[in-house]
Image (cartoon, rainbow, N blue to C red; front, side, top):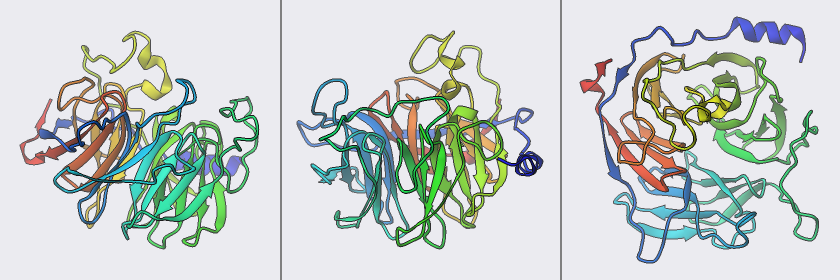
Length: 358
């Protein structure tokens, strides 16, 4: 990356929110979903809500195969009342290891599968409409991608452990790719390859596990650069606009959802404020919601990175969180959160008018 690009990125860095007094937002939590008898959830990788308030979950359930390398991906639809409607894509070739689900503005359903290296678009009726990427052939030596230093060069239109998808107002498609390639792949609305931006690293425009991606009404892209403990904001052409860092004091008694308290938070993806998820509410005034794994909070932010409130902590009880892996935010004060460790979806109703500052 040329030095002038680095210098430009540095000039656009947002100031972290360390000095803010961040209010706690009161909220209620209710179980969101009802499964039929004999059916069970696994790790909740993704949750999305369509225009009819139907809830879609992509979870690591219905597992088959050996304990290591098992197939663990199932896409389920529920009504606004939380009652089970149907399974979508049962037996689909791409179903391997669920990572995220999104619904676009015309209610198409998109799944991102980290295990098969594929992204699939379904119509609202549940039929496959587009396929992105390709998994390793079963007739060859099918093994997880080896992480080498430096990483092997990415290949256009192929992914290595993709994580999420977003769209700009023109319908262009952006896929965060992901654990290995650490880039964003751009396609046009017809699925034609356009370009790629980002590369492994820690500098402006570089990425370390882009774990989630969302777009605002202007088409700017907010990437959860998890390994670099920041959200990076790009324009639709991949130019870095700014970065957002979350630096809010951690309670002295905070414990991680999983792991030894003295070591778990030393990993970049578990450090306080390291973003696992990004979600942007509908307009006209949009808010950015971000979650971390430790201390397990959700942060409500303006799009320029100012934190206006936060909620929650790690734990197993209602209103506590075990590794939020995706957030759906159909409105400013209504959130659905998918938890990896607790195997559940919680529906959160925020009450910001009653917020108090610590």
